[in-house]
Length: 209
Image (cartoon, rainbow, N blue to C red):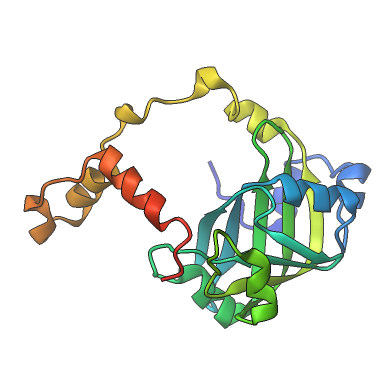
């Protein structure tokens, strides 16, 4: 099959977007957008560096962990991760971000695209306090585009259906997989059992180290 290498060739294979799909894109957050964000405990951030190399990174917390400041602004706290800083390096390079918000049990998703900056203002980090702890910084997003995604993708995935869930035991533990992937001196190290790994994670959920 020939590669689709032009906008014209791509468009020829699809019907035009429906009017509602075009008009649903907003330039600010309305009450429905704010409500969706407030209910969401999970999102995926998409960024790219100056050369166009892409990255997607998960973020999670209690519903409402992403704070809506006003119709055009949200902040996303940064809690402990792997300290690779791929997302944040990209934000420094381009100042742009995209995000997909999910709400468990809701088949629609919600997208935000916008300008992004890293901020450590106490006025902003203090809004994201959890158990007396504060994030090292927040991702400050100025909303440029906001719109709902229809339910088809999540329905196809059966994402919220209990019968579609996979037992964790079908995969090796995280440490076992990393040991195989990295090799070298790590290959001889005993793998941390999954229950020990999860217990350690729980103590670090809201660290800002």
